[in-house]
Image 1 (cartoon, rainbow, N blue to C red):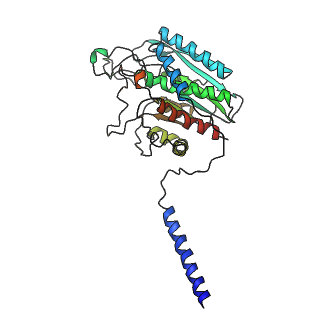
Image 2 (cartoon, one colour):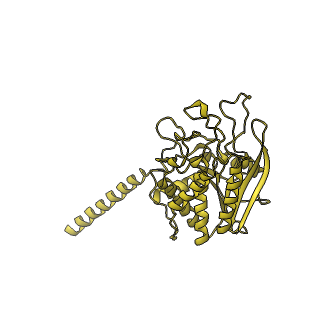
Image 3 (cartoon, one colour):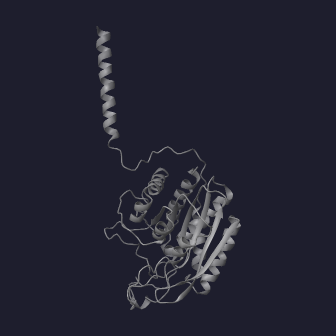
Length: 335
């Protein structure tokens, strides 16, 4: 009898534990940070190297289209990328700015294993804004900015990723695309009538004229303002609309590798007109935007955005590391 009672009690305990466990499962967060991933030796992203790549771009001066700084920086990118990846091209064209000015646009594209159909692309814009039209001093509105964060940071992270790819080869094909003429959009102080689609001219051109006939990628990741201090990267609305699975993968990866304080779980859903909008709408490759948006209630860009303070003082190595290591993990875990 004692044995039967003991077995009955044991069954009850097991049953209670089972149902309690089920109840706990229902309370799991929507982001599954424990998703099983293949065991891969992911290279360590070097934030000092990325910082140096950002710094070198800024040393050329504002990389505004039709300027000597644009020419010098283009040559720098091509030289560096050819040292890491054998297939590098410059897609050069002319695009019309909001004011009718014709701009020389140079999209720089480096490919790893271009023969593979199983591929993704990583992108950023490398030009800088010709106007400091968000500067506190209106006298600076027509002054070009250094664009250390807004432009150079994303390109710097991608150069370091290209360097790492050359040292340890991932299993998938990868295209690194540096878009030009992104930041020549119509300023608020412009006296011309409001014109649509004046931003992201380089990516608009590429989406209509990809560098390879019938170009295909599983998905794309865009970086914009990824080097600022105390940066936060919420889930951006257009990214969620067109590529929710990619957003989920990248943010889950950031959680797993320890960067949840950067890739925040709070979903603002604010839609940002950026290069990824035109890629999603024109060429139809699911593409997300990792972009710094403040979480101070203003839903705004960082304070140095489109001001003369967007210089090297705005760049933080730890932010470059958070973004770079997250992307490296995504890349090397792709099968």
